[in-house]
Image (cartoon, rainbow, N blue to C red):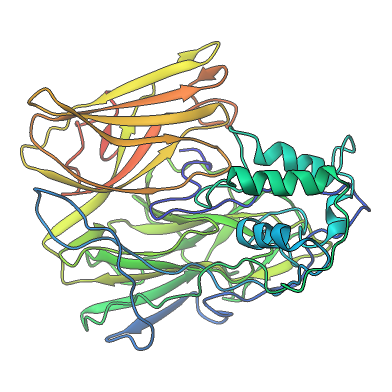
Length: 476
């Protein structure tokens, strides 16, 4: 499976690849050194377990899951990474300052984060040359806020309103001149961390974090787009467990881009790490994170399958600083050996039959073999560079149709959506992917995919008995 599969997963996220950065020598790029968000340093052991009742924090509520199916409650989202550093917007007009803080500040703040190439907090930032040297950063900003394929700000942050677009564009086209504004303040931030650890004494939580063989933080070299994999033996041993909640641990937001956690069918060598190409043919995706993505708490009677002989944390780094920078990011998982009534798992909808020399649409029909209702919790579209839109339609056995998901797609901003519904016996699902150019199936980013990763229970309920993978329902 491609390393690009699902950059941001089941609870939403934001990939801060931003507008074009300044040309070399034209301004600051993300610096070196760590900036600690949630989770802390994490040196010593490669697991940190906490058992019994959790203290502190509270859990926010989210959307209800399912209608007409088993189970009640909702998948509850919690806060994301820690707040960003403070930067003042004191020399831009007040209306522009508000737009920049709200829509751009999380990534393009005083300290650029999550792969963003530059700050956008001062008038002078907009007059610098963009990386290609053909235009200014301000001109690049105008292009991106009007780009319907790869817009800024990126989802899930809303697009600028027409009034906001007009204010920002007019100011930039007028020369991005300095203008004192008394309404200075902190740049945009992610929500503060919320502790979503269950209070159930049968639940134990573990920190699975980036580290070297000695347990110290991993030293991220100053190499853009580094994929590095960390291997772990299951900390709960060979016992079967259910995942009941998880939240991201974001240690060094200047270098972390996203991570994915897989469970492997074969045993792995514990406490090892190595650069990786992103293919995981014998693994199942469990959870993933990208900037803006919160954690998730399962409904009270649902646990996610965590079967596997080992785990791989695949981490995408983007260190454009001048030196190596330490990172201990990862995931805080809470599991229970007291298995819950319903077991959820990730299911694959879509198609591998993609052969479109000039773009167009490819569709796959999922005909579940389950004879009982299946409750869907969330959906996460995945395509590659030519992907433009995904739709999954439920074809009810009575002849009616319902839309599970109908969303534009941007390869740089792959997010998950809460899509609570129930699939009944006899229902089928048609997933259609739209491409803007040549689309031929393959794992490389210049090839294409068409997958909707659906979290649903019972585990395997949306499987059609695919020979390609566990929980496959793509018609092959």
